[in-house]
Length: 283
Figure 1 (cartoon, rainbow, N blue to C red):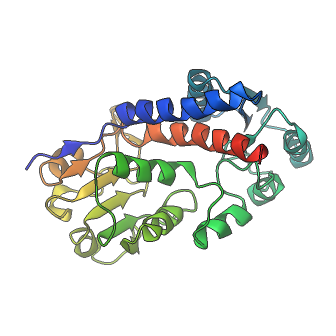
Figure 2 (spheres, rainbow, N blue to C red):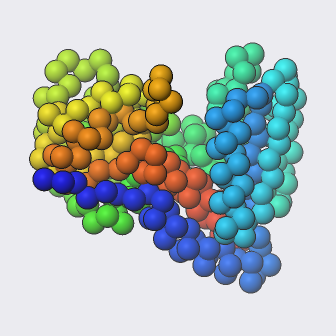
């Protein structure tokens, strides 16, 4: 068996085209969706990510701002910037790029962002609405995974979905979204005893542990949909996921590559959430 490749780049372009129509409809009514990003410090990966967000906004005709603050920015100064964006009518959604420097309490940062502009879906109020099945915003990476499954024709209802990873950013919300679509969901971690026993039973396997190539082909059920959220750089410079692509693709029915799988969808769903926030502002 050779897995069908779930092309995140192609699907993200298709989804962006759909959301551009909604953004254009808003602009025709005098509203330009606005997204802002705050980055604190000099993390190179964050700067690349922010650059991709700016490019995505340009594609959809969304207004964008990004604020680059020095690493020694105080917590009080960052919270003041957040308050300004909460009050800015041009900005419908914004986020603070995590992680922030250690002297800043990330929980205070997340609480300070208005739930109505929290396009990352990390405010406790939005997390609670996700738990109750009526989310205003959904964390962008698992939101993107759900869209990949939908666009690839992977059936979710009644299937056994195994999520490996329990982070607040991916693992936990991923499990909730799959549960909302009537999957039977199991959550594992890298510490799960006999992890392969669970992964071999998965019709849908989502892996987000940050451990390079920890899931091999012999841990996968034949025909399963394998979604690799991880991105790791090996000593030789090669980018790989949390799944060993070569062995897994010989067994799986569908699989996402790294890079070019989940990554493009994360940014796509961020701009989609910004358009949704702008639509709600007119209600």
